[in-house]
Length: 326
Image (cartoon, rainbow, N blue to C red; front, side, top):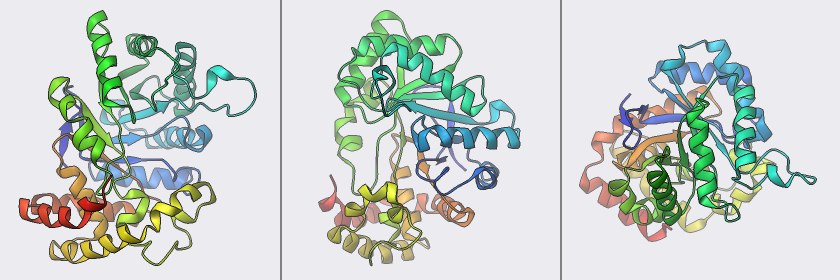
């Protein structure tokens, strides 16, 4: 495994990491989580990503139980969670959903700590921007959570570049803990934000990236070229919103054109797509997902392709995918 610094911090995270979105509770129970996290850890993965909203808090609970059973030294792994959506999706609890106000953030982190059975969480994120809460209020609250020792670093997920810069400048002005990292979607067909919108932030404020959906929810594995296979992520009822993208005809045709490139490099389509994301020097870690142990191990084979992605190979990949990217 290779390790990279998270932005300008001294924290080092594995180039590939393991996330729990979709899989935990929906496809993976505690026993399977223990098995896969152990295999990931043995392979050198030290970062495990989560969020309060995943499976309505049950994803955090499963990861917490797994961590308890694995009993690793706390210094040896990095755990994250994210806040915004809340857990109370009904009723009049207006301060518990779709917000980044101080009241919600303070109580949300306490809930995550209970579910994950930890005394602190390494990385906490504002899961989406909140247009109704002043950024200054959010920055103060996130900084205070770090000062209290409940978290070590904070960042954003899917924030516009202008809002990230505004948050960083508020923290700089008031000598608060600054946002360190952003968690954006990034894959061969989703590039603009990482490669263009955030371009100035890497050098100006040292922004690090912990990217998600490197396989475009499975599209880049090639398994959706003939429709939605049974047992796949796209077949899950709560993932129905992904189906239109997974069956996108032009993109599936492009994926087929990537197959011989992957074969020439001695890898699979998925490994090629994962290695492509990791090739970006601004990416601190690529968050992968897996519902089976063999899938996890196959994904980790992407490491062997990194050095094979020469400028010539990257140009061939771009010729196929860049015209269809957003």
